[in-house]
Amino acid sequence: MSRKSFPYKPSGGDLRDLEQPGYYAGYSTLAQKKHWEAATRELVTHRVDKTPSTIRFFSQEEADVLTAIIDRLMPQDDRASMRTISVLPVIDERLFTNSLNGFRYEDMPSDREAYRLGINAINEMALSRFDQSFIGLPVHRQELILKSLHDGKPDPEHPTWQRMPVHRFWALLMEDCVTAYYSHPWAWDEIGFGGPAYPRGYMRLEHGLPEPWEKDEQRYEWNAPADSLSELDEEGAPPEHSSLHGHGGTH
Image (cartoon, rainbow, N blue to C red):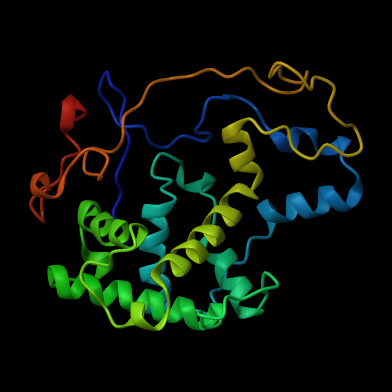
């Protein structure tokens, strides 16, 4: 089970169990679905009502590791559990059906093989560096492994990155995660996206003005999770079995 790492308010207290994170409280893209043409309405509502529930491509161990990876790349710890956007099932469905983006770099294996190699490498890197599986690591140490891949300097080295370029695997992984997340209408609510424009269209195309059915941005302040790389350096990492969620009087 993946570890949680909650962002927190500067005044104290974790940000969690939000039905709708972001700066557009009360906004709902789906509330506008009656204005969409039928094919668009069916496609978008399908992403909420019929998310794949069965993992068919990944093994259970691979799925567990990838879930932990996704939780660090696209953290949703502030979201209520019933409003969490499913990312892993979307990736799994793409790979199970062997749906491709229409191209493959000549120095990369197939997407299916790349995921299996990459997940195994990340887990073995965690075992080598910290003597613990990736899913068992605290947030900070998981992020150290992933940041080394992001930086193109795997730490520790692993033979997988001699078989495929680490920067291309990272780009593949991030593209799939971002696509799965930001194609979901709940993510549109979070960023205030007005939703499909056809057939109604948009009227206010200048000066960043919201459409009549949109919400004005209402900002609030928050800080990064206390045990993330945003807040700590490697030397300042918490002991393996401790937590910093009490940082700043949050608990």
